[in-house]
Length: 156
Image (cartoon, rainbow, N blue to C red; front, side, top):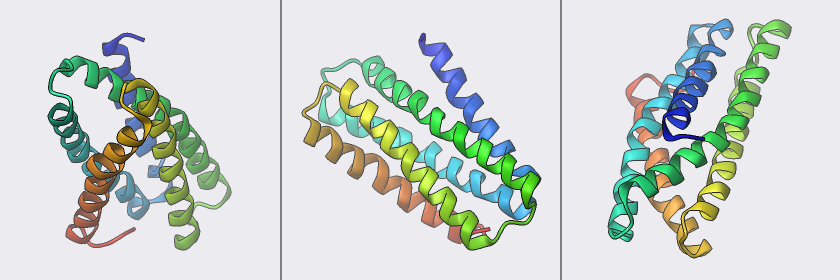
């Protein structure tokens, strides 16, 4: 896929993911906004870390590795969209604990799929790529998500 196509896919999948929460009510619709905010900050953080670790690699190499990782993650996002739409039809007000647990599993599955693609595309040793993924992307994401959740009144 071309870089513009990958960018369009990333934004379109994120928009579809966010929109799929709307039928579940305004409280549920806050969750993808919090996730998007944390991701919007953590991906550039990760990009800077990649440039620091391997400054001789072109920036576009890292951009492509990340975009292909995100594209693979959109498959799991599609499952989340289907889950939300099915849930909205079957039970418009899902139990909070079940809802949050299901989305945590989907978020972790998305991350695992993206990490696997990044490990293959990065050209780094697998341990180094995984360590970089965990420390420079996942850790900041968790921190930014925690800050966003507390700043905007907790989880839905």
